[in-house]
Amino acid sequence: SPLSPVLEISLSSDNPDDIPLFPGEKIDAEINAREVTFICPYEGEIRGHLYLTNYKLYFKSNEEREPNNKTRLVHVPLGTIKKIDKFGGSQTKGNNAYGIILHCKDVRTLKFAHSPENHSRRDVFEKLRQYAFPLTYPSNKTMFCFEFKATYPIDGWSIYEPLAEFRRMNLPNESWRITKINDKYKLCDTYPAILVVPHNVTDNDLQAVAAFRSRARLPVLSWIHPESQASIVRCSQPLTGISGQRSTDDEKYIQMIMDANAQSHKIFIMDARPQTNAMANRTRGGGLENEHLYNNAEIQFLGIASIHPMRESLRKLTELCYGNIDDSLFMIELEKSQWLKHIQIILSGAVRIVDKIEYQKTSVVVHCSDGWDRTSQLTSLAMLMLDPYYRTLTGFQVLVEKEWLS
Image: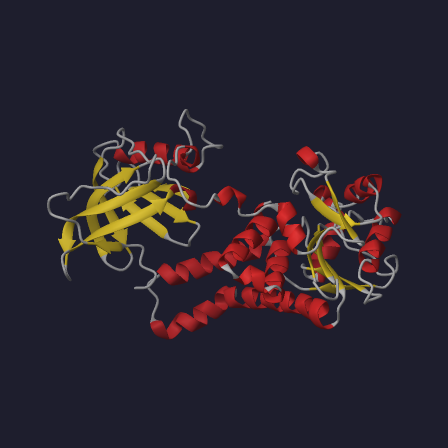
């Protein structure tokens, strides 16, 4: 199966127990899980050994299977684990009724049965929590990223350099300037230290605008069109609240963003949320822009669901991929999960942004509630379509760093 969590390798007979390790990767000698059964959804029960390193969980079968006498492996980088559950108790009867379930970020769900007679489940469970969730379950162990000893001809830490990326977009210019008001993340702790803002705005103005935006995520430039100067600007929702508060500083700031593009006297505010969700957020202090207060601004709602329906949809998709479902029902259940509908709505929203930038030559402000997740999806997808640089290997790395990690 293309979704099978099992890898197949041929091991040399003179070194059958060799475990591939990265430089700096170490096997945890305290884990002794020699009799473990991996319950594979496609191949059934596979018995073998479970190893734990400071980088991965590694299962290797102790039996060769047809065809071609392949050894079965399961390789789980610890960073892909999002949840660990136990199943069964010490008195549970039946084969393979006692063990651990791993829920992974790559949609794999892996089930390992242990023998209740020894303490391997307890040991693996406790160590896995420490390795996979070091902030929640602190220990004296050093995270693998600080132990990794491999060397490469290119330093991955420097692939994205903000000032170099801004220079690539011919920034700063007469309409936009670079500010270090967020140096040491004093203004907004979830924004980069270096930001691009309209040329005429003062740092005092920026502080006032940040105070009116959720988590102080004020509108800042993500991308600018090399010819029209239409820009993609991202931020979080305004804090209008139930009483409909306004900020003249924020209104003037959006006007400055519009004025930075001489080819258009209009600006679009793309709210990623369904309109009902945006209005409901007013009861929690959030809200949306009032078109009557923002001159020449048009608000469009893109209808992307919040994280909770998305998680439920992904859960259904995961169950569908790993469940025993008849092929004739697969497409029906896929539609019920609504996963493809969510993907379609996100892509459609990104296309609408591209249309405003490329064909209407109009700047766009993009936000959701807090200005991440849905906002990053929309800005990065739009930039992929607009800028061929981001469709190169290096450019894609820069895009991910810039829009998701900086």
